[in-house]
Image (cartoon, rainbow, N blue to C red; front, side):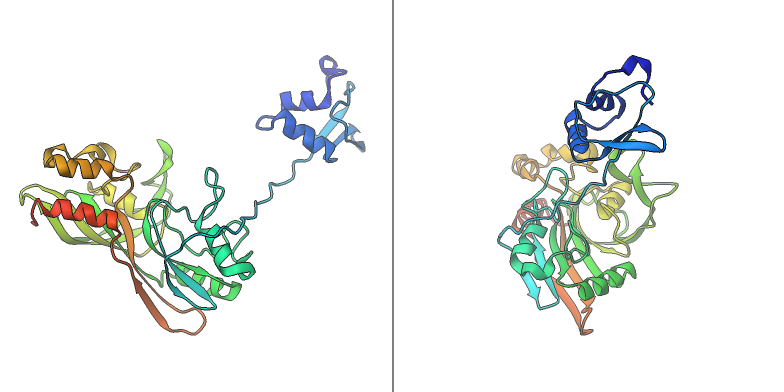
Amino acid sequence: MVGPDAARERIDRLLSQTIDGLSRMRIKALIEAGQARVGQTGDMRTVTEASYRVKPGEVIELRIPPAEEAVPKPQAMDLTIVYEDEHLIVIDKPAGLVVHPAPGNPDRTLVNALLAHCGDSLSGVGGVRRPGIVHRLDKDTSGLLVAAKHDAAHAGLSALFARHDIQRRYRALVWGRPRQGNGRIEGNIGRDPNNRKKMAVVARGGKAAVTHYTQVEAYGLVASPAASLVDCRLETGRTHQIRVHLASIGHPVLGDPLYGGARRGRGAELGAALAHAIGAFRRQALHAVELGFRHPMDGRDLIFHSPLPHDMQVLVAFFLQLGRV
């Protein structure tokens, strides 16, 4: 309700001083769109002039419609297509490519590329901003990803992921060597209470997460290996799961900007060439090497493989100079 001190104030100025999180320009646009009403309870009228001067005792209502999702635009991009039929498409995603539009990455995403490649059939499948997307890879994680081309395929693939009936194997370069050659990491994953941009293994809440890892090879001294190449298989698919789980056992993924901790800058003691290669590696050394599932439409068992990308192969070659453990 408008108090005596606010008499004759412009309605847009008064609302901008009252409502947090909305700019005066946004409020003005809402008023001009007919979203503001003034008057007495039970006798309200619409105001469309932002310059309207309020009166003492008036009640002001401002309707803020829910934000509409932006519709991604098709943008032609080179894609490495591993498999494609009329129902689905399997992509080998490069590091640096965002899967779907988000704040800070409104376009030039995999979704934009899929819309250009697949045409109108993909529009709206699985949601406006994420058409066809069933699962995702982090921007700087490379490797295999499947997308649906129509609603039935999307529903079938989503059901497989919900049942964890998907074969997913990742290969990562990690610091050090896990004490056991293979193991199982189990721990609920939720928002890090100290840094909302990160995930963490949490004692309470979060979502159940299980990762199985197997050492492929290790490099350096037997007593103190510098790094290891490990395979990880997922039972679940939580945000940043592999990165969080490996960091939780003291072996973060090399190059990880969020979970690598102080070890991210390690490498000087390993020789100048290797230290330079590590410093030049600008992403987490994680690649989705295997993806297997039952075709949602015809029931065929499909499995796809992707070799390590060149940047990870270069790192492995440098570590091999230290010798295998």
